Length: 55
Image (cartoon, rainbow, N blue to C red; front, side):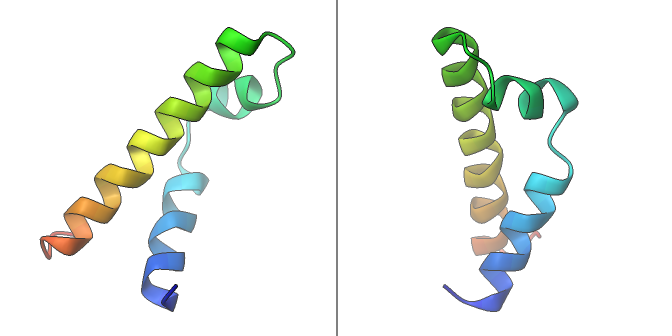
């Protein structure tokens, strides 16, 4: 992974909403999956934008 990709992913994680951070550690599997899917979508969106030259 390039440093540019690493930096892009780090920026996404840094701006993740508090509920995502909390729910990633939740005991409730539904909450945890929702948070994982949300974070994955945020990362995918950022990588797509970067690939398009927008990020």
